[in-house]
Length: 407
Image (cartoon, rainbow, N blue to C red; front, side, top):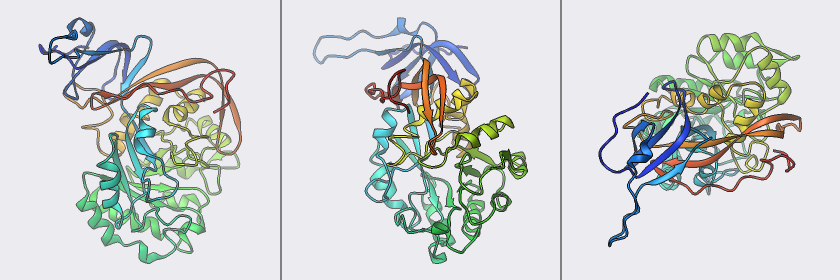
């Protein structure tokens, strides 16, 4: 598969990598050329068209070349569940610091902001970050600013019209509605009323609801019954009460939900990834649709750490590399209805690109509940390229190599 080669010099060439793009079906060793922040060619031998640096005044730097031989080149990764509203919400992390080391070019803030705080997320984070930041708007007007006080304990916060106005005014930023349908500390005595209100807003704009599960005061089957095609269950592998696995078996309502188009997202986090639960699901051939980190200030130093680490855990459990890449590129892009601009490598598209290395060798993984598993392969980001501009190659985290501390 090749494309016409433009005559003008390139700004950047990612050379000789294995291009793995599930959205297009492309899996080949080739080069990618970038000019003015856009992919302008995908073909072998593009290095021959690189412009050398010139020394006359003013100097020209020529074409920057990233040697990707032996590496995996994918669309920029999309982390569907993050918390990046720093300075306003507790338990958050800076978007650019997380993205640059992880291959993620798009981070989706999962409910940090509600109707009363979404403008601040735009001004302080989305507009100020090199990373593309999108958002699930929380159905609660206060979002997650009040934690540990529950955002849904007072129904007055769950203002459907305020949320609808916020979605309408921020349609470029808001990709869905978030609700935490969880412990009484969060929802009080209101059962699934928060979810019903979230669903009513989402239906109005034909956008998905992302519902956080685990320790809910109602059975999971009641939550799933409220969801429709395209809605997203996050923390799908939680080991907390009222999860997807009961007595070591996947509950049938989960299969019914998937059959009607409900999506399931990992959302690893600090307390929402349990190996026995994952293994029970995989035994039933129930793999996640999307892989995300739920990265925040508690999970960033472990157990989630970053998106390649979370990807590695699913890879070690038998998910194929191709499926893991799809679950962090094309699948989350489709889930938020941004496939036209995100999650693929296409000529003319924005040059959001991840360059990954797949290591071989013994490695120890930990879940959020202290369970340990061992694997023999893991993924690390070598380069993160956002709109054609590479970040400096990150230093590897401790624990990435045999004999180092565990993940």
